[in-house]
Length: 228
Image (tube, rainbow, N blue to C red; front, side, top):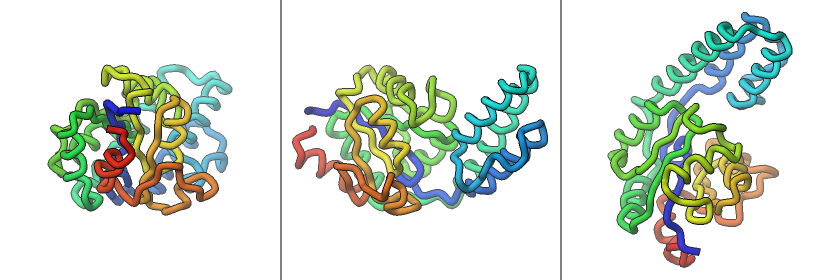
């Protein structure tokens, strides 16, 4: 296969940022419980933000919560998440070799996209800090796809905006969520070993078939495998 585009995760794939996710999720849960979510049923350590919100939506439907109250809660939760991410920008760091690799991939004529569950402004500011913002054709953040990763609608929407198909692209990420996104959409996946939890980032601690230490190795790997 010959690739025409690459979709990248952001956090722990291109950058390392010290976002306090547990604190963020703790504030989300406190807000939800304040407005009627059953106490003790959500966890800031065992659930992702997506799972927390899926549970919240299910509970809202069960309670027949008024739409205006749901909209208010969604807005406040978005603000909690946005602020937690933006607070991390001053101290974020490039994963070594990321910027040169991205520039090389662009020189190869590939279309490049970011698909993240983080806020759009956080993604933009992070890429600008690394000096690679202009290398990306598409940047999609939280709530900018019909479904979030790992659901099929995330990658499907991204490739449509890229003017490509799932057969034309590879997804690059550091976590099982990224891998599941690729599986659910039917596109190729390459994992990188820069996840915060190491091999625990992958289901059963089993890395993907295509696996690199970091994005820095990606241009050479794609060339060696005949993918470009």
